Image 1: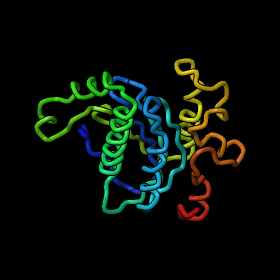
Image 2 (image 1 turned 180 degrees about the horizontal axis):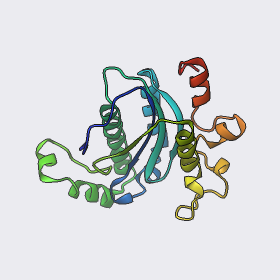
Image 3 (image 1 turned 60 degrees about the horizontal axis):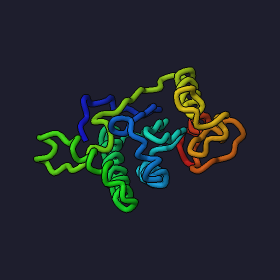
Image 4 (image 1 turned 180 degrees about the vertical axis):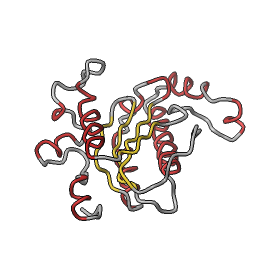
Length: 194
C-alpha cells in the first residue's frame, strides 16, 4: 500500500479516511462490512480504541484513539487496507464479479506489480487528521455520522438509520453493528477500556 507521507505518531484522536479505487462501491459489492469490523477488533487488540466510524459502500471513516506502540498509524492503516483488499477480492471472485476483479488488476502500476501486488482495491494513500481539541473531535464525529445522509449519498434519511455507523451510540447510547468507546469516557478515565 503506497503511503505518500509519514504521519505524526503521537497519542491522541485521529480521523482516518480511506477510499476504494475509483470510488467503486467495493465494500457494498463484496458485503465486506464484517471484514472492517474484524480489522477494528485487531486495532482494539493492539491497544487502540474505536471512538467512531462510518462504513460507506466505497470508503471508510474512522475516529481512532491511537496509543503509540510498535506500529505507526501508517502501518496500522496499511495493514488494514491490505487485509480488507484480500477479503474484498476473494468475495468478488466468489460472486463472479470478474469484470471488477479485472479492472482492479489492470490498475496496478508497474513497480507495484514487480513487488507482487495483484489488485488496486483502495486509493494508494489515506487521509489522516489529528483531532487536537474537543471542537475538532465533535466536528469530525458529526461529519462522519451525517455522511450517509448527505445529498451525494442518500443512503439514509436519518443518521440513526444507517446500520454501519456509530451514530446511534452518540445519540441514544445504543451500539449499532460495532461497539465503540466514547471519547468522553476515555478522557474521564484516562483509558480506552470498555
